[in-house]
Every structure is written in structure tokens, then in C-alpha cells.
Length: 608
Image 1 (cartoon, rainbow, N blue to C red):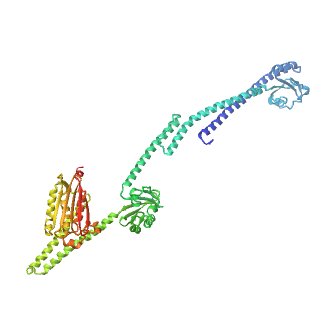
Image 2 (image 1 turned 45 degrees about the vertical axis):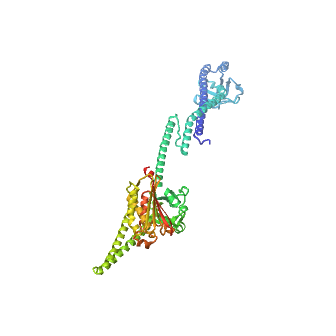
Image 3 (image 1 turned 120 degrees about the vertical axis):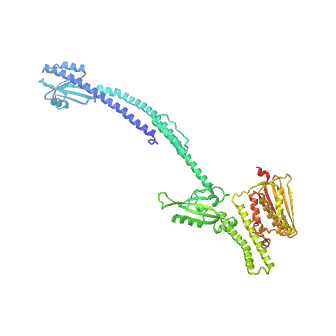
């Protein structure tokens, strides 16, 4: 818009100054020239008047009017002689008999008063300026005032002749000045336009844009400063982005969910763990920022604690069940085993300026499902251990009391029987403790037992020694078949593998009828090492298969205790297989039998 830009404002301002300067100069020159012409005319009239005054004074009353007429014609000056009464006695241009009395003319009055006078006024006939010079003649008895007048034709001719030229000259000068002004303004505004365009690019976020200006010096320095600012600002933004990225990566690497909401419960920041815990790891990764908390965690308990945290400015904690988008009792009913337990800590964020003002809430979210499960397992484990140890301890204490009360020398047979029972219960407690210690060592985090290259024959020999007495006692035929065509060794902890196979075989013998068969098939090749223990026992109910590897779990509790089992055998087997990087599977049919298969990594896996 006109008058808004620097270019238009400078153009208008310079044009006005240029017009004022040129027109003013023309006016001043004209006025000065007019004054010069008038001054020159005045000086000439004064000089001529002085000369004529001396001549007239010399002539006295005998004035030579013809000579005066000739003088007037030669000098182009009008001569007028005025008597004391104001009447005109001679005029070189008009008939004095027809002229009015000049006694009251301004120049005559002033000449009488001051000796001389100069007056300028327009001619009534020609409408042109006329300069009148009057001088008092004190030495002439007839003529009182000599008046000379001259028509300022030079001034009129000058104004008429050169006025148009002045106007044309002014126009030419204005045109040249305007062109020079436009060029000068372009000289200044083009760099400004480039600077403005670059600044707009910077405002759009394109900080790589640069402005190059060579002139003038001030704009060159401004452009250099803008480029330096863009470089520095770009570096600062890059640094902030790197810090933001690091901050985001740190948040996303945390296992705890971090959720920051303002006092209106609008999410300001959320990390990946918070998204996975509240929305789900398999859901689309939409940005939670800007969403309302109620959209992803609308549980009444959560919203109430948020409000309490803001009002009371204190930390709060909540444990709540979660499944999908459900919380609390609904989550437990719908999710069942897939329900998670979340522990949420609400920390108020206080303003740095006003510590009493809460600006938001940082919610720390942890999945404590496994911790709760482990806590329940621990409680159950303690209860089971207490129960398992209580039985033999009670038996031992009872029989010791019986031995104390009876006469052992008289009833030797009963004494020996009681001592045998005490010994068996003591051995049972010893087995329970040993199994617990072994299980505890296997469950240590990152447990890595020492492994050596072991031949399968060594393992088989030690396994046979472990079950030989029980198999003989129950008349069970145990057959072991080894398929190892390349005679490959195993990289294992031999003692643990012997323990695992022995536990499986002893269980097979224990839960099979007497005089039955137990078969062990061992296959070793470059792909894997596989051990399968099969029996023809009572089998395992389908609903019990998922629990048989749990501590102290027994399918037939009474039979297991009669056989002296600790309830930890299969749990130990599972952990031994796991620390070797293997797997264990079971197939069973009630009344037919069961088969346990242990698969360990291949030789190629170990070598790679």
C-alpha cells in the first residue's frame, strides 16, 4: 500500500523535498532577478534625476523643455515637472494641461518631506508596473519636484520570456531528480527487500537461507548480522532438538511409564512405556500428547487421586487392575489371567515462582503384576515349605517323645522301629533342604553353571547308579537306548544333567505299577540332543499338566509322600533344562502313561 513501505515513503519524501528545492530555487531566483532589475532601474533614475536637477536649477525659470523632451525620448524615461501648488508644468509623455494636480501623489508628498522618494505602482493604461522617482528641487524657484518614471518592461519581458523556460526547466529538473531518486531508492530498497525475504524464510523455519548484500555498508553489516544470527539460532535449535531427542530416548528407554498432565488433566508428555501400559503394545502408536487423561485412563480412582494430588499438593499412590481400556473390577472380570496390576504414583509439580501453585502431575506407572505373582508364589512357597517340613518334624518329635517315655531295653523291637522312622523322616527333611538349595541356586538371576565337554556314556552310567536300587525294589525294567552315530560329546554340566534325568526316571518308576517298564531314548546329532523318558504308569490329568513343574505340586499327594517325594523334582528338572538353554515337554494319557522330552541345544549352536 502507498505510504506504507519504505520505498513509497522515501519516494514521496524525496519528491516533496526535490519539488520544494527546485520550485523554491526558481522562485527565489525570480524574486532576486526582479529586485536586481528594480535596483538597477532605481539607480539609473536617481542618477538621471541628479543630472537633470542640476541642469534645471542652472536654467532657473528659463527651462529648455525641448531638450527635456529629447532627453526623455533618448533615455526612454518619462519626465514630469511639478510646481509648488501641485500643478504639472511639463510632462514628456502626456499633455500637462489635461493632467490632474499631482500635489497629493505619494511620491511627491514624500519627496517634499524627505528630499527624494521611490514608489512602484501599476500603470492605469498598460497595467504594467511603473517605478517613480521624485526629487525635490530646492534651488529652483519655479519647479518644486522633478519626477522620473520608467515602465518596468524588462521585468515584464523577463517574466514573459523566461517564465515558460523556468517552468520547463523545473519540470526537467524534477524529472531528472525523480529518476535519480528512484534509482537511489532502488539502490537502498533492493538490499532491504533481499533482507526482508530472507527474514521471512527464517520466520518460516528455513534457517539455511542466507542474504548477500554488498552495499551500502550499513546494510552489509545488517545482512552479516542476520546471517550470523541464523547460524547461531540454527545451532541452538539443533542443540535443543538433540537434547529433546536424548530426553525422549531416555524416557522411552525407561521401563516405568511416565505420564505428565497439567491441572486440566491434559497429557503434556508420555513415554513409550506409558503408552504400552495404558493403551497396549500392539495398538497403533498414536501420540498421546494433547489428549485428555480420561480418554486412556478414565477410572474413577485415578481421576480422584489426580484431583487430590492437585488440591492437597501431596504424593499419592494407587494399585489398580488393568485390562485393555478397563480398570478395577471390570478389568479383573474381563481380563482374568491377562489382567495386569499397575502401581501408579502421583507426584505434584510445583511452580518455580509460586511453590504453593501446582502446575501439573507426574504419574509414574509400573507393571507390578509379576511382583504380585512372585509375592503370592513366595507366600505359597513359605506355606508349602512350612507344611512339608512340619510333617517330618512332627513325626520325629512324636517318636522321640515315645522313646523317652518307653523302656527301650525291654522293648528293643519297638525302639528299633521308632529309630528307623526317625531316620527316614530325617532323610526326608535332608532331601527337602538339599532340593531347596539346588532349586535356589538354579533360580539365581543369570545363573550359568560350569559346563564341560562330557560323553553321553558317563552321564548314562551315573544315571543308572541313581535309580538302580529303586528299580530293583519295584521290579521295574529300565531300558536306555542311545542314538549317537557321530559319537558327539555334550557341552553341559554333567552333574545337573544326571540330576534331571535321574529325577525323571525315578518319577517314572515311582508312578508306574511294579514290574512295569520305563524306556529312555537318547538321540544326539548336530541339530540337538534329545532325552525322552516314557513310562506306562497312571498318567497325568490334563488339568494338572500345566502345574506339574510348580514347587511342591503333586498329582497324588498321598502316594508321593508315601514314596518319600519332596514335590520339587520336576521343578528342579525344568530349571536345569532352562539354564542349559533347552526345553522340556510332556505328553500324557490317564491310564496309559506319560512321556517327558528334554531338548538341549545342538553342538553346532554351542560352536557358533
